[in-house]
Image (cartoon, rainbow, N blue to C red; front, side, top):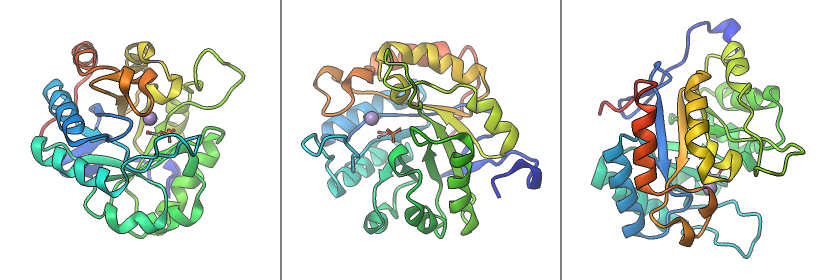
Length: 265
Ligand code: PEP
Ligand code: MN
């Protein structure tokens, strides 16, 4: 179902009137983790003013260490909804297990993180609901495996899948992961699904975000996911890769020279 052979035209995923994959660039921005109402509402207002399309924010966090901040959980989702109400930006958040699904009913896009890309039981259930799914590439997944995971969702009837390249594991240690830019033209050839790039998680370094966001547009991605934090040094998660709202605004000004943005509503 994800294969272009049987579906030649590009899929456009409609999220509350905003169209991902229509030929414009969708910007998914926001903090790695929702930390407080003040934090998420103030970031949401800033990124909205700069032209972001969606507000991202983690409530359930898949951390490497069990002793690291695990996210605010259900409260985090409630705070995201407050930020949506304050700005009108549709919200994106990561689900980690099936039991959380009812709490995501009022979330606009459900994210499946790299670590759950092959959680097939979760993918099958997400295939049975009528809601856009942002599927991130597993850090060691081939492009074929990535598409097969999309297929798990689509097989059950949900064809609103947005793919996200977020860097893969290689021998390189200068960056957290290696952004696989070639995956955009290759997957666009093989599949009709929209695909975005997440430079923040790909490198783990805030100063690479501008250059790689430009690369995302140049290579034909349908959007970019950028972590934005009001105080990156104090962030409870992924501060090193997060940019400030001011820096985000400058990057958006630059990106607007290269592309048209999905920012109509
Ligand atoms: C995230 O988007 O916050 C995240 C945890 O990403 P990934 O699954 O790509 O590591
Ligand atoms: Mn993060």
